[in-house]
Length: 282
Image (cartoon, rainbow, N blue to C red; front, side, top):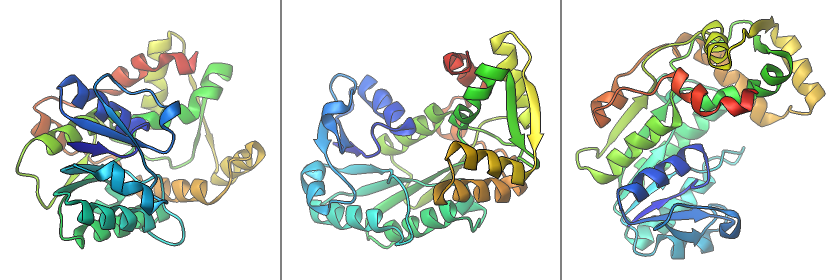
């Protein structure tokens, strides 16, 4: 039995669908099971990283866990510590953690730092582990949907990186492969798409699928921050994301062949993701 945490999220939901389609025994952990919808055949367990007493039942009879904590605060990787302690007591054999490529490149932003510390907790657990370190998700483009739909414009910040963006389904495909096949003990896999896209490329691809051009408008960092403040989107999580984006300019364009090497299939393209999600831009 595999336990999928973060089961309602971008990657977790894709992973559940892949495993359920293969008739793999799988259990989804969620804080709010009554609100969640999962594929047929998926067991559902109530569990919360911040409530250690809720984890024992979710882990009962589980062999492997896909570890996807909801985030990191100033107190560090408490959620991984809670899960690891419960997993050791439950006799779990293998933890597969969703991390970030920033760890591969020694980034020091809060997001990468949180994942690095979380990885260390898992490495110190005594359990078998595998780390998955994806770069920028194609789902990041959700953040541009409002202005693309309303103004046919994509507002970016000067210096935004060229990015080898990855489809969340490819991350899930690698996770499914790692969970269901041997040979991944102690491995850290950096995951990217098969092509690096500039902000202009991203806007052009959305425009091609929409059938109308998308204007690309660059803002200074100060103008971007002012707009986020106006929308009420400021705060530590946003600041952490912007710092990760700033640091990733040096490496987010680098392409790794991990997806194809492990799954035997080339990564999905940005055209694929945009076609699947075109409704958000209309």
